[in-house]
Amino acid sequence: MRQQDYMFLLMVLVFALPFPIWALTADWTQRRERRRRKELADKLHLVENG
Image 1 (tube, rainbow, N blue to C red):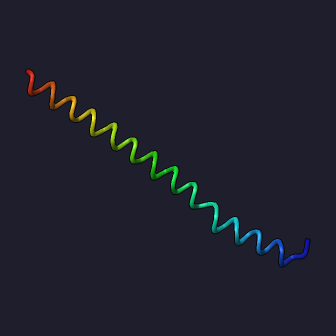
Image 2: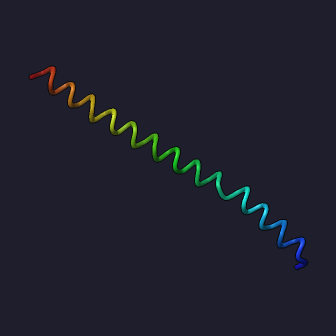
Image 3: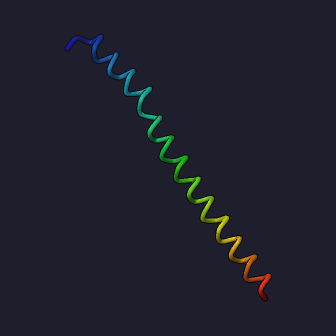
């Protein structure tokens, strides 16, 4: 492999790596936010029912 090939691979990795990581973190935060909202709704429900 020539040095240009290594540079190209490096660029591809640098550009390609953040996307799946970003997708995973976005999915994770969304799921956590949904769970937190559900807990809040449950608490409100408990308060309403007394």
